[in-house]
Amino acid sequence: VTDFEPVHPLVSATSAQSLSEALRDRVQRQSTLRLVPEGALKFEARVVGWEVRPINVQGDETAGANRISVSVVLVYTNTLDPSLSMERTFSRYVDLPSSQDVFAAEEALVEELGELLSQDMFNATLGNW
Image (cartoon, rainbow, N blue to C red):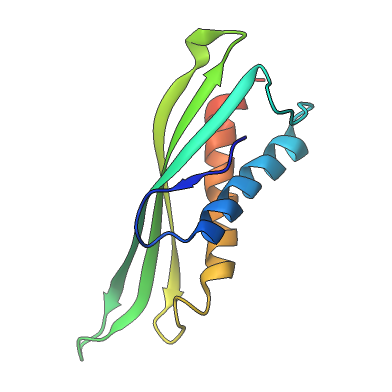
């Protein structure tokens, strides 16, 4: 699992690193596979989307919450069975009350998004392992 590349301008290198660590942890926790530099399976990803949008707009035109969405393009290469290799975009979001600052909560948001995205990526690539 290589480090995710932060392509979108709002994605920090730290956030991209946290997302790649979430996938590494998931692979180690939910499979018998070991992480090695040059393995039979390879995960490469680019963080291509990071969006904050107001949701639940109230009568006074203030947002009740903000929705933080992240999109990751995963390139999965399986040298044992190339027919299982793929490139696919995964997107997830979390909602944050508008009373909380998005940047102050970024670490917790990225951790939650990493859990969600890593589960989706694991299921799509190794779910039948």
